[in-house]
Length: 204
Image (tube, rainbow, N blue to C red; front, side, top):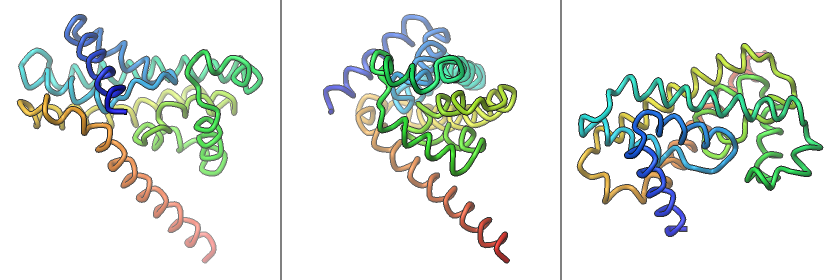
Protein backbone atom coordinates (compact mmCIF):
# COMPACT_ATOMS: atom_id res chain seq x y z
CA UNK A 1 0.00 0.00 0.00
CA UNK A 2 2.79 2.42 0.91
CA UNK A 3 4.45 1.68 -2.44
CA UNK A 4 1.26 2.55 -4.32
CA UNK A 5 0.80 5.78 -2.38
CA UNK A 6 4.45 6.70 -3.02
CA UNK A 7 4.01 6.07 -6.76
CA UNK A 8 0.81 8.14 -6.88
CA UNK A 9 2.55 10.90 -4.96
CA UNK A 10 5.37 10.98 -7.51
CA UNK A 11 2.86 11.00 -10.37
CA UNK A 12 0.99 13.92 -8.84
CA UNK A 13 4.20 15.83 -8.22
CA UNK A 14 5.26 15.26 -11.84
CA UNK A 15 1.94 16.46 -13.28
CA UNK A 16 1.74 19.58 -11.16
CA UNK A 17 5.44 20.48 -11.27
CA UNK A 18 5.57 19.99 -15.05
CA UNK A 19 2.25 21.51 -16.12
CA UNK A 20 1.37 23.94 -13.34
CA UNK A 21 -2.28 24.84 -12.98
CA UNK A 22 -3.15 22.63 -15.97
CA UNK A 23 -1.56 19.71 -14.12
CA UNK A 24 -3.83 20.43 -11.13
CA UNK A 25 -6.86 20.49 -13.45
CA UNK A 26 -5.90 17.20 -15.13
CA UNK A 27 -5.12 15.43 -11.85
CA UNK A 28 -8.43 16.47 -10.28
CA UNK A 29 -10.37 15.57 -13.43
CA UNK A 30 -8.84 12.09 -13.34
CA UNK A 31 -9.71 11.70 -9.65
CA UNK A 32 -13.32 12.72 -10.26
CA UNK A 33 -13.77 10.49 -13.32
CA UNK A 34 -13.67 7.28 -11.26
CA UNK A 35 -9.91 6.76 -11.56
CA UNK A 36 -8.44 6.49 -8.04
CA UNK A 37 -5.81 9.24 -8.10
CA UNK A 38 -6.27 10.52 -4.52
CA UNK A 39 -7.12 14.18 -4.04
CA UNK A 40 -5.59 13.91 -0.58
CA UNK A 41 -2.24 13.88 -2.38
CA UNK A 42 -3.12 16.22 -5.27
CA UNK A 43 -4.52 19.06 -3.18
CA UNK A 44 -2.00 19.22 -0.31
CA UNK A 45 0.83 19.21 -2.87
CA UNK A 46 -0.98 22.04 -4.66
CA UNK A 47 -1.05 23.82 -1.30
CA UNK A 48 2.67 23.19 -0.96
CA UNK A 49 3.16 24.91 -4.33
CA UNK A 50 1.13 27.83 -2.95
CA UNK A 51 3.47 27.89 0.05
CA UNK A 52 6.45 28.06 -2.30
CA UNK A 53 4.87 30.99 -4.15
CA UNK A 54 4.39 29.13 -7.45
CA UNK A 55 0.57 29.18 -7.23
CA UNK A 56 -2.06 31.61 -6.00
CA UNK A 57 -4.34 30.01 -3.39
CA UNK A 58 -7.66 31.10 -4.92
CA UNK A 59 -6.63 30.41 -8.51
CA UNK A 60 -5.45 26.94 -7.51
CA UNK A 61 -8.69 26.27 -5.63
CA UNK A 62 -10.89 27.35 -8.54
CA UNK A 63 -8.89 25.34 -11.08
CA UNK A 64 -8.94 22.24 -8.86
CA UNK A 65 -12.71 22.66 -8.49
CA UNK A 66 -13.14 22.99 -12.26
CA UNK A 67 -11.08 19.84 -12.77
CA UNK A 68 -13.28 18.02 -10.29
CA UNK A 69 -16.37 19.30 -12.07
CA UNK A 70 -15.11 18.27 -15.51
CA UNK A 71 -14.26 14.75 -14.37
CA UNK A 72 -17.57 14.51 -12.52
CA UNK A 73 -19.49 15.46 -15.66
CA UNK A 74 -17.65 12.82 -17.68
CA UNK A 75 -18.69 10.18 -15.13
CA UNK A 76 -22.23 11.63 -14.96
CA UNK A 77 -22.78 11.29 -18.71
CA UNK A 78 -21.30 7.80 -18.72
CA UNK A 79 -24.08 7.00 -16.26
CA UNK A 80 -26.71 8.82 -18.35
CA UNK A 81 -25.81 7.27 -21.69
CA UNK A 82 -24.48 3.87 -20.66
CA UNK A 83 -26.27 3.06 -17.45
CA UNK A 84 -25.58 -0.01 -15.36
CA UNK A 85 -25.30 -2.46 -18.31
CA UNK A 86 -22.37 -0.46 -19.72
CA UNK A 87 -20.68 -0.24 -16.32
CA UNK A 88 -21.09 -3.95 -15.63
CA UNK A 89 -19.52 -4.80 -18.98
CA UNK A 90 -16.82 -2.17 -19.30
CA UNK A 91 -16.45 -0.68 -15.83
CA UNK A 92 -13.22 -2.53 -15.09
CA UNK A 93 -11.57 -0.73 -18.01
CA UNK A 94 -12.20 2.58 -16.21
CA UNK A 95 -11.04 1.32 -12.78
CA UNK A 96 -14.65 1.26 -11.54
CA UNK A 97 -14.98 -0.99 -8.51
CA UNK A 98 -18.41 -2.70 -8.53
CA UNK A 99 -18.69 -2.83 -4.72
CA UNK A 100 -17.84 0.82 -4.26
CA UNK A 101 -20.22 1.81 -7.06
CA UNK A 102 -23.03 -0.24 -5.47
CA UNK A 103 -22.36 1.46 -2.14
CA UNK A 104 -22.56 4.95 -3.64
CA UNK A 105 -25.75 3.97 -5.49
CA UNK A 106 -27.39 2.89 -2.22
CA UNK A 107 -26.26 6.13 -0.62
CA UNK A 108 -27.76 8.12 -3.48
CA UNK A 109 -31.06 6.20 -3.33
CA UNK A 110 -31.39 6.74 0.43
CA UNK A 111 -30.41 10.39 0.69
CA UNK A 112 -31.20 11.75 -2.77
CA UNK A 113 -29.47 14.46 -4.73
CA UNK A 114 -27.82 16.08 -1.68
CA UNK A 115 -25.52 13.05 -1.65
CA UNK A 116 -23.70 14.63 -4.60
CA UNK A 117 -22.96 17.75 -2.53
CA UNK A 118 -21.84 15.90 0.59
CA UNK A 119 -20.22 13.10 -1.40
CA UNK A 120 -17.64 15.50 -2.82
CA UNK A 121 -16.21 15.72 0.70
CA UNK A 122 -16.15 12.00 1.50
CA UNK A 123 -13.50 9.39 0.65
CA UNK A 124 -14.42 6.80 -2.00
CA UNK A 125 -17.86 8.38 -2.46
CA UNK A 126 -16.47 11.51 -4.14
CA UNK A 127 -14.75 9.40 -6.79
CA UNK A 128 -17.88 7.50 -7.83
CA UNK A 129 -20.91 9.61 -6.86
CA UNK A 130 -21.39 11.12 -10.34
CA UNK A 131 -22.16 7.70 -11.83
CA UNK A 132 -25.31 6.91 -9.81
CA UNK A 133 -26.37 10.55 -10.32
CA UNK A 134 -26.13 9.98 -14.06
CA UNK A 135 -27.89 6.61 -13.92
CA UNK A 136 -30.72 8.28 -11.95
CA UNK A 137 -30.71 11.10 -14.56
CA UNK A 138 -30.34 13.78 -11.92
CA UNK A 139 -31.02 17.29 -13.20
CA UNK A 140 -27.71 18.35 -14.81
CA UNK A 141 -27.94 21.91 -13.44
CA UNK A 142 -28.29 20.56 -9.89
CA UNK A 143 -25.50 18.10 -10.57
CA UNK A 144 -23.17 20.90 -11.68
CA UNK A 145 -24.14 23.17 -8.77
CA UNK A 146 -23.82 20.53 -6.04
CA UNK A 147 -20.57 19.19 -7.47
CA UNK A 148 -19.03 22.65 -7.76
CA UNK A 149 -19.99 23.68 -4.20
CA UNK A 150 -18.86 20.43 -2.56
CA UNK A 151 -15.66 20.27 -4.59
CA UNK A 152 -14.81 23.90 -3.86
CA UNK A 153 -15.06 23.35 -0.10
CA UNK A 154 -12.98 20.18 -0.27
CA UNK A 155 -10.34 21.69 -2.55
CA UNK A 156 -10.00 24.85 -0.47
CA UNK A 157 -9.64 22.84 2.75
CA UNK A 158 -6.95 20.46 1.52
CA UNK A 159 -5.01 23.13 -0.38
CA UNK A 160 -5.03 25.24 2.79
CA UNK A 161 -3.73 22.27 4.79
CA UNK A 162 -0.91 21.78 2.29
CA UNK A 163 -0.07 25.46 2.43
CA UNK A 164 0.01 25.56 6.22
CA UNK A 165 2.18 22.45 6.48
CA UNK A 166 4.54 23.95 3.93
CA UNK A 167 8.09 22.78 4.48
CA UNK A 168 6.94 19.54 6.12
CA UNK A 169 5.46 18.23 2.85
CA UNK A 170 8.02 15.47 2.20
CA UNK A 171 7.81 13.96 5.67
CA UNK A 172 4.02 14.15 5.92
CA UNK A 173 3.05 13.08 2.38
CA UNK A 174 2.49 9.36 3.26
CA UNK A 175 -0.05 10.34 5.92
CA UNK A 176 -2.41 12.41 3.77
CA UNK A 177 -4.36 9.37 2.59
CA UNK A 178 -4.95 8.26 6.17
CA UNK A 179 -5.89 11.78 7.21
CA UNK A 180 -8.43 11.84 4.37
CA UNK A 181 -10.17 8.80 5.85
CA UNK A 182 -10.37 10.48 9.27
CA UNK A 183 -11.76 13.73 7.80
CA UNK A 184 -14.22 11.81 5.69
CA UNK A 185 -15.34 9.76 8.68
CA UNK A 186 -16.03 12.90 10.71
CA UNK A 187 -18.01 14.45 7.85
CA UNK A 188 -20.00 11.24 7.41
CA UNK A 189 -20.91 11.20 11.12
CA UNK A 190 -22.07 14.83 10.87
CA UNK A 191 -24.26 13.98 7.87
CA UNK A 192 -25.75 10.92 9.55
CA UNK A 193 -26.49 12.96 12.67
CA UNK A 194 -28.24 15.63 10.59
CA UNK A 195 -30.31 13.02 8.71
CA UNK A 196 -31.29 11.29 11.96
CA UNK A 197 -32.31 14.60 13.52
CA UNK A 198 -34.40 15.47 10.46
CA UNK A 199 -36.17 12.09 10.54
CA UNK A 200 -37.00 12.50 14.23
CA UNK A 201 -38.34 15.99 13.57
CA UNK A 202 -40.62 14.68 10.80
CA UNK A 203 -41.98 11.93 13.07
CA UNK A 204 -42.91 14.55 15.65
